[in-house]
Length: 630
Image 1: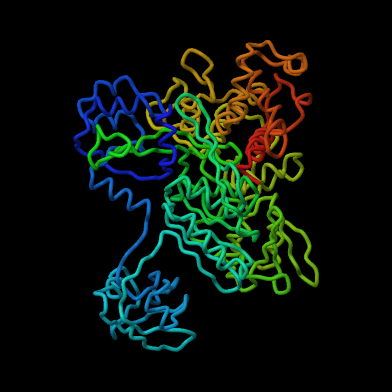
Image 2: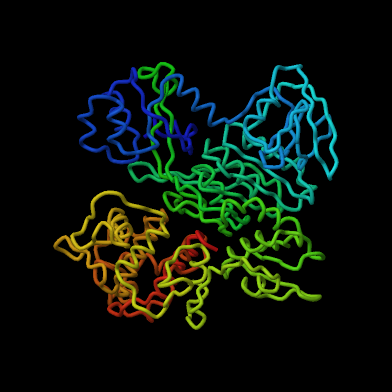
């Protein structure tokens, strides 16, 4: 254990997929190291592996891998993600109209020539670069001291600039000031200096900033400490991370970095935001420090450590092995494993940047649309393209407030009304048309906003219909973001059935059981006792404190305190610990939002069927209680 803790500072939350090559490390040596540190159980067949490559494959863990000396260095370089090149000093995007300048690199020739973000390079050395492509990038690079002439289009007129190429260092984290008082943080990875670069940028620009944009798109992770230090710079010292090892021990990870800003924060994510990126995004979410915008993150909730010549000199000589040693939990004790981080506003990747610009480009005086998330108000840029506005409003759940101003004052409304007033013909509501009379309408529409529910037909949820076992598993699989491949585990669940993936995935996680005889009975209704049991298991899967509480209840073996025994008396012994977890919820000893139950326990009947509206409300209560959804 001491050896594991000594390696804690080297823990990595990084997503890298490298092939396991031939190595000097033997299978026996690798097994010895894995037995000491590996988070998961080692499969029995792994002990019969004839090669290191076969051993790694038999583990079935995509994050545990051996690296040759060359691959190990490439891995370290990838984590740092610093770039050294010779060029003119711009970051660019290739468009049909030319090379769009996104940013200006400090110390580059472009900065000296006063180029600006938004400039369009339409020719290089007199040769047109419209439409622009990767082949034009090399024309901007070259030998140090050499010159290149670019033709720049700005505000309808062109101008030639002759620039001398310079050696440029581009750090993995860059902080800049955009128009309108927007601070922009481009974070490519969490390298050793990321926290310091972030803090320096905040200190330099915060007095000029109204809102910070932290771009974690395509950031696959890096060092734990850097993500923690960034959270400290946003919200002050604290514990934003917990590691759980293979023996069930849980270790808090603290940062002592002082807060450097109190401005609103928007974090941009996509499906490639993973690991340490998810730690940062989840920390912002859990503390209520800001708004997450984009698509659902990758869902990597395990951390690795590096074994190399420094940690184990008798085993390695320049090479290394990355081993999964922890499951990690965010500030609120909730995992990102598989489930990822669901943004406050779930928008398609095509619109993420434009929606961010819209949310930061307006003002109380000029805007007709305002969104309030938590304690922050976002006035929408009145010049926003209608397609972008539609994408924004489609993503708004009931818990994010919408205000529209048709005259002098703002009035609260729903997204559909705002879209109608703005004339957004492309708006397609994610809310359901038949739930207005349901007592759980807000919860159902919130789940719909995050695309976590299937309707019985487009736009229709059928809230009063009974929930079947197959429907529940399908809902859970979508919520937890899990899949399944392989033969069906039940004789009455055909592999091509619409619910097969969900049923088998939930059974594999241990959240649901069959009915006996190898059957699942997918069309059978779910009782409230069964639903609460599965809901409690799901809460335990997601949250480390709830899991510990459930273990404590299980250890009592039915010898519960009198009050708890009376409360749980109507429930079967197999259901009691799961129901107890939901009742205990987050209000007893944890920071949170209250019960994980969607209704008081004395209003529920164990043997009664569960309705679809209750299932949606129950899932939302857990997700909201754990801060996974707002």
